[in-house]
Amino acid sequence: MKRRIFAAEHEAFRATVRTFLAKEVLPHHDQWEKDGIVSRDAWLAAGRQGLLGLAVPQEYGGGGDPDFRYSAVLAEEFTRAGASGLALGLHNDIIGPYLTTLGTAEQKRRWLPGFCTGEIITAIAMTEPGAGSDLQGIRTTAEDHGDHWLLNGSKTFISNGILADLVIVVARTTPQGGAKGLSLLVVERGAAGFERGRNLDKIGQKAQDTAELFFHDVRVPKENLLGELNGAFGHLMNHLAQERLSIAMAGIAGAEHLLEITTRHVKEREAFGRPLAALQHIRFEVAEMATECAVTRTFLDRCIVDHANGELDAVHASMAKWWATELHKRVADRCLQLHGGYGYMTEFPVARAFTDGRIQTIYGGTTEIMKEIIGRSLLA
Image 1 (cartoon, rainbow, N blue to C red):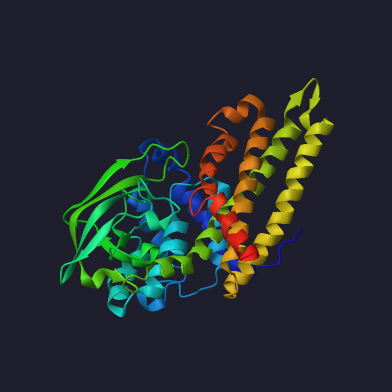
Image 2: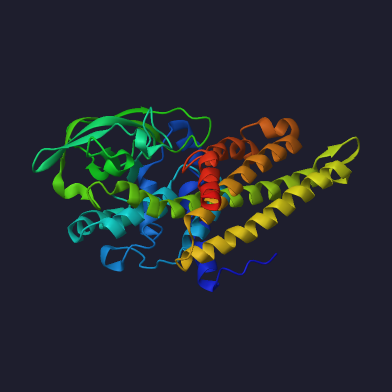
């Protein structure tokens, strides 16, 4: 089905993104996977190309366009290219809104220009060894010491954890109150007591640095409080819809691309003297995946338009996230099977997609959490 959500300017942007990927990302991605981290030069190149801070006001060096369809194009093209290392979606779509909507005028002047040039790489630190989706389990604390907060605790599975120059840390600022006692504190590179642990060895997304972070009596200036004191839970809930939609967009784009390359493979690969595509079972497999992708794409495109118009709610974002990522998982498994032994070789895109995409049903809120959010909304 022809998509109707993009205009000429979005397709022109798509061409720009493809050129950037071909020149600045794909020639280096294999090396980044071996290194477990991307080059900072790639972030600077993304900044020069105008791919960072798409929605950041122009006065701070950003694109100044809040149209989320540009983010959709970026997510689709990076997913199709298998470029999981350069986490522009995390930077633009997840962390950017915290800085632009919650930052003070002084904070915006201090951080946003570097955010847009790629000189400041960002991360957000929520997950802890004993607290994942349950924010009430967060144990990292920040004590009020007059002109600063004293931050202690640890975080894990933090994307961009090694490269990050600026980390938004979710910390407990009151001893009581459960999730309501949390605040967002911005920790900058070089802060005394801020240490990075291992660059974690994952089964997929090898080029994307994911780290443990440790905070030992880190003095965080009072002016680095982001948003309201003890207001982190509300801030997080307000921004999670966009995060989950971003993950969903990568999920459906990945599934569509897997279907595309698998369709080519079964047409070319022969078994028992004829192409795999001549077998009825193969045709049924492809037909089922194509239908599921088409139906999911229709819903996702509606969500993208709704979000661009400020109308997407948390429930529909949760629906999009769990369905699209679970679809990607199913499609990746079936496409790998249709590739046979070749699908198990890491040099084939289907193998990388199988491992790279597996995290999507976990980060940003697990599938189970998404279903809980939807169920509560319907049965409360």
